[in-house]
Image 1 (cartoon, one colour):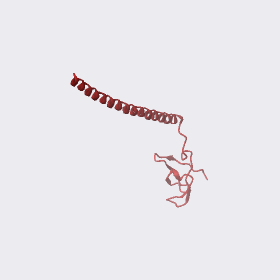
Image 2 (tube, rainbow, N blue to C red; image 1 turned 90 degrees about the vertical axis):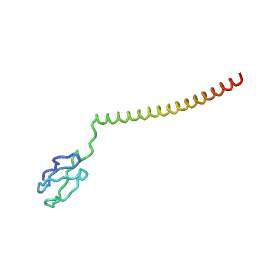
Image 3 (cartoon, one colour; image 1 turned 90 degrees about the horizontal axis):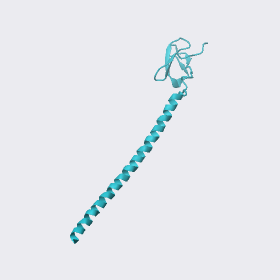
Image 4 (cartoon, rainbow, N blue to C red; image 1 turned 120 degrees about the horizontal axis):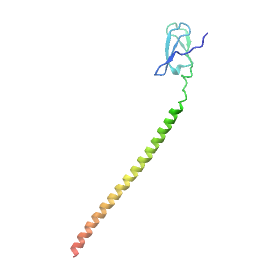
Length: 116
């Protein structure tokens, strides 16, 4: 008996292989790797092949580096956004304080004119 090898794997992650008994082409979800299923054509039990591709492969180093850089970038963006929000609040407080001081100045100048 020859080892069962998948012929291909499509974009959806399905395994494409042939029945061990009648060589009929079969398609199953990669999650079924290692299970025994009945062939739709001949009805005999057929082992779904296990491949290194059906296991979650370790991401290439470049992909891992890009994911790390993306996380780092997002963290920095969050930090800077937080600073901007804090400074916006502080700016608003200073504007209110300035407005209060301008109003007080106007009141004092008016009082000064009344007394002179």
